[in-house]
Amino acid sequence: MTGKALLRNFVNGEYVEAKDGRYSDVIDPSTGEVYAQAPVSSAADVDAAFQAAAAAFPGWRDATPKERSLALLKIADAIEARAEEIVAAESRNTGKPVQLTMEEEIPPMVDNIRFFAGAARMLEGKSTGEYMADHTSSIRREPIGVCAQVAPWNYPMMMAVWKFAPALAAGNTVVLKPSDTTPVSTLLLAEIASEFLPPGVFNVVMGDRDTGRALVEHPTPQMVSITGSVRAGMEVAASAARDLKKVHLELGGKAPVVVFADADIASAAEGIAGAGLFNAGQDCTAATRVLVQESIAEEFTAALAAAAADLKTAGPDDPDAYFGPVNNAHQLAQVQGFIDRVPAHAKIETGGHRIGDTGYFFEPTVISGFRQDDEHIQNEIFGPVITVQAFDTEETAVEWANGVRYALAASVWTKDHGTAMRMTKALDFGAVWVNTHIPFISEMPHGGFKHSGYGKDLSLYGFEDYTRIKHVMHYIGK
Image (cartoon, rainbow, N blue to C red):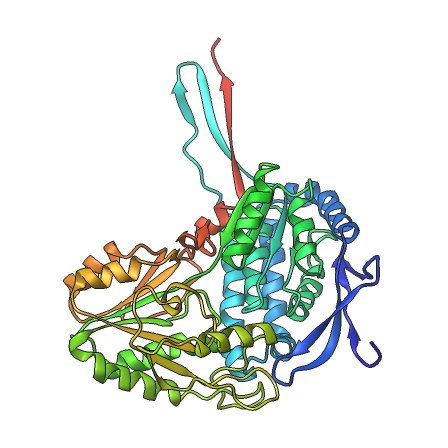
């Protein structure tokens, strides 16, 4: 471990050593080189973090909404002020382009925190009243307690914000585990937040899948929130069920992008290429499954392939880079495996190869000619690969769009208002865009159905997920 940064967990307001001294490598995906080592936390480390969170909970629960809101506003201001430092950590850990990350991730992160700071002061419930003679009823919206949270590697710092901001705004305390491949920016966020929070309110433990299991199985947390794979979500739900913990799951996606013949081909191709390849396609909502009407399929596919090929992949410091490398060697192998298994009836229109032998870069790729039952249509590739299918009728488009186990996001591209209205009703997905794909706003919810999980991020719906409802009744008769 000589010459490599040694990371430590952040518990009870300070950095602490893991108890058994086991570490894993943290790799820069742009170079493939180890630049830090992170603790593989044991059950004892997890227990220490939950003890800290449990001890801090009564005080944070009893803080006024104004006090919690002010703390979050200060955290948002501090993140904004230290944006360059945070982005440098994120880009080193993920390979993301520095300039694009600064422009596309810091502003929404800060806005998300400020939104939840406001939500802390807007607790909602039914009107107090006499719903039974001689009795007055009222509703209390309370924090759930200590929350266990698991964040993914595709958006480490942004997903950390989506986890801790609503939880803290509602009065909970948290123990958050980042992905074992991308812990660095999350630690920095916890350190920044600690300047404005009581010790133990926001804790971070690092580790592997066993660490995550220890987090979920621990008796202290009353809620478990995870953004990750379907496999991980199912494991979490099964484990949490044994202790009747509340579960919040944001899992995989296979977003259909339905392009009708009346769509603006050039505009749609450019927009879909950008939404499909942003962050190297490592996004559960990425526009990577295109369904295009047969009459324009050839023209549109050519335009899409050209738009994709124009998007540059390069290291973090290249100002022209649109996306960086795939996150890790395992994911690169998975993407390559899908390419190696492209069926004979499909055609690679552009890309399809790894770039160089340093880092985990992969070309922007568009592949046409797929059939509905092909694995490339049914399963997440989670890389810079866009698939194309040609459909004949609107009914077929709906059938194919909905014909996967995921139900997170979708988009429709058409100039016809009636088509847009019918499709947004028929598409069985938690978010549906029209003539755009992937924008998020703090005020609106994000979350899916089916194997994409349940529960909402962002919005007041996301805030309410971190609360519980108590009915209080007073007898007022004489």
